[in-house]
Image (cartoon, rainbow, N blue to C red; front, side, top):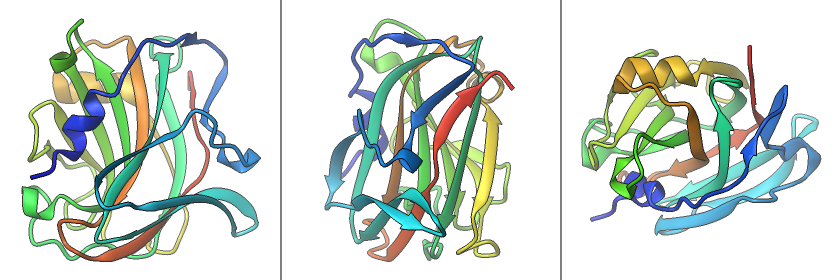
Length: 213
């Protein structure tokens, strides 16, 4: 049994609080993966910086595997609550039920990792996903741990192989979903995972950054 989300919750250590008008967390377009580390769960998703559609992005390639890239960095959500990113996927995954352990695979995820207390078991994640079947805006508890919640930002195959640009107010999303007033996040992670379905897919991630609007 694997615990993809639960393990990510325990990878955090203290770091410097960042304050800026625009906080660049994933500066992929500059050709940098500084600060990003890989964590394997079941097999290894391949991540690399590649030039795609005339820009440098983070490319992921997963075949019956699950591993993610994570970066530890504290961000003050009272000052910079909005996350921005772009992503593209090759195909969705044919999972029977993505809300059960057997279907907990997604072509693209972005983890928001935060804590509402001093102990590691109080660490939680909000997982923005490109859902396979769930409707955009739907959210549900992660099937592996009650400390994580999934949130469908995109869904289905309508926009596969097309770049989608996203922005979310993390401060509001955490409050609405977890009922918590959280002032900082502890880390961020990206993942393409296919180990439950045994499938294959690719995804591409543009720069990830935070701002106050």
